Image 1 (spheres, helix red, strand yellow):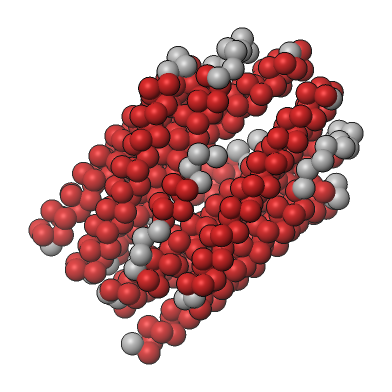
Image 2: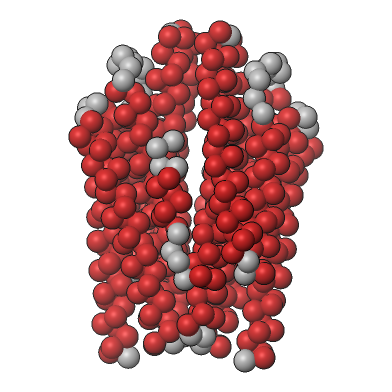
Length: 223
Length: 223
């Protein structure tokens, strides 16, 4: 059992390392978008391979733990959660790549004056990633709930962004390409927040045995 | 071991049932979009809860199998794959819901004459879902490769759809709302194809021990 705890700590460490990489990718991708910073965009694209390799390594760690320690009950659930969290983190990394690619395209065109608060969405989303991993590592339901709560704020910002961008496009049809790119960037940030929420819901399930996965969804299902 | 095989078959059956539900959801959501069929859209939204419940049931089945049978090596990998496939299927269901919600919004507005081949994308994506589950159930690498190959076709259709819709919007700014909705529907179909591809990559890994997950991505990374 002590050996199991040690291995489990290594798995937690790996997930924290992975989430650090993903957070950096989100941060870089948003900088590339808002500051039109080509170097940041390239770095996000370059680091994608590292995140992918990390995902494979964590899956292997989890498989080893399952095979060698044959955990049951709560320990088993914990490792199943780690596998899912790993998956969610990698998907967030993919979304950061999408944003960086949008940014590269936007850099080739004239800056657009559309009023859209990408930085605030991005900051919230990054914070959700960090906090949701805290919730997992400390098995803290209060932090998990806080993350789920933040998701509503991100959804609302995304809704406002869409509305403003649609309005701007209609008034400035020459900016349609740029506005659509910004809409997809906002969409990616919302997806990142959704993945963080998935993790928070897994944590609540783990800690309290309540499956909230699809309850949170039903309240925001009509967006 | 015979008991394990029996339980494993039940798990496979559940995944097939889930994929049938998801296929139906995709089909219904696309009908709601292309035929402006409100009943179909409502049914997709109503069935979301069933898909979600099924996901939870399959996760429980997998957890039971891991806990009671304590499989190792290939059997363990198989169950880990089942957990991931379950997750991918549920995400496809979410995308069908997104399409149905877009369809509901589009029904309130004038039909738009933009030339975009949603039905062909949808048919390809649905076929990928069905085939990728075939690949898993029969552990057939040839079918898995065929699915991965189809993903490029869906990506190409999505690229064409975006290009045509952007062009149409510029010429018909009064149709911007509808065109943006159609772009997001095309995006959802592409995501469904991506999830099918994830599953196919898992199958290849399972059958051949080759981790292709992030190789396929790197070839389509610059879209």
